[in-house]
Image (cartoon, rainbow, N blue to C red; front, side):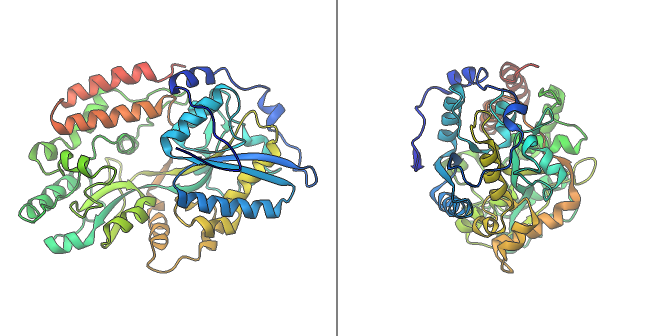
Amino acid sequence: MLITHKAAGAVAVTMSLALTLAACGGSGTTAERGSGEKLSKSKHITISLAWWGEPERAKMYEKAVGLFEKKHPNITVQTQFQDWDGYWTARATEAAGGSMPDVIQMDSSYLRQYGATGQLLDLNGQVGVNLKVNGIDKSLLKSGQVDGGQYGVPTSTNTLALFYNADILKKLGIDPPAKGYTWDDYNAWIEKVSKAGKGKEPALYGADDYSGTFWYFLQWLVQQGVDPFTKDGQLNFNEEQLAKWLNVGKGVRESGAFYPIKKNKQLDPLTGFHANEIASETSWDNFLAGYASESGEDLKMLPMPSGDNGPQQFWKPAMLLSASKNTSEPAAAAALIDFLVNEPEVGSIFGTSKGVPAVQKQIDAMKVKQGSVDAEVVQYEKDAADAVTKSAPVPVEGFGEIEAEFKRLGEELQYGNITEDKFVSQWFSFANDKVKKS
């Protein structure tokens, strides 16, 4: 469902047709449209802003936009938001007609898809003119780049974490994984928890099956010293490496120590961790607020299990802000991005709901209370900083589809409908058809 404020949404067409047409969109060169005159303070300007999210996020955006319009009384910002699926369908439709919003909340999964097909403005021409990026970590800023172009500016950071339920572990008399634990250590811990929780009502488990989540596989590859994707947007791993990843959790899967997939599907979109039936779950650190509100128990975070080269992780932009290549107001679009990324009061509005702010001034403005969810997420990222050794992999074109297929096959594996080898062959067959060849 499209929800708008001061603007109407796009006409829906099929995603596949729109994305095919999108590659033909765009006009003018980056230099022509991206580089920068100073923002006019007198000319009346109207620009549009779109994001995905729920009504609570919309309230935050509207408040932030109100502050921007107050600072720039000659600029009107038309806003709209949708749920995740509807958002990307609308963007594909608009891209096909060269009519994307001036400023777009962007996910790294789609950055190459839109940046490499000429739909996004290279913001390099606005840096130092209407856009400041000097407060953003260089490795984080790099995650918004494709082929040297700055097609997105990270608004906030997150990194993967192991969440654990301290109340469940206390009930079972089991300690959390020790500092520096490996994937093998984690598997042994899962089996220990599931064995101790077997007689409880309901039964308690150590974790659900992490194997079918594409980002965890990418994290594992980074730990093996492998960049998952090439600079020109191709897969940089092979069938043998994927098989090795699936076999990391094979013993736990075969022992029945993972939380049953049938029970997880019954709770969807929540999980057994939300329902306090699982002692741990891996996810992005900014999920803490959602977990805490559903669980109501004492939840803690640890870094991800270590790989062969130690605890290597990466900052992933929780989201980015991009501008349309076809915007008629690149200066105003860049100024809005600058405001949303750098303005301290915006940090106090959003807190860590979009991840930890990318610039320190916004973190400071949050004035987090000791013991609050925001404080825990900020502290976790401080503690995890030494383990962050890489920039986030910039996904290939077609990432969303191959990620969804990875998840689907992961569920089939958990149901016992396919083997690890079938997963590998079917996924590569699908991915080789979907990932755009350079």
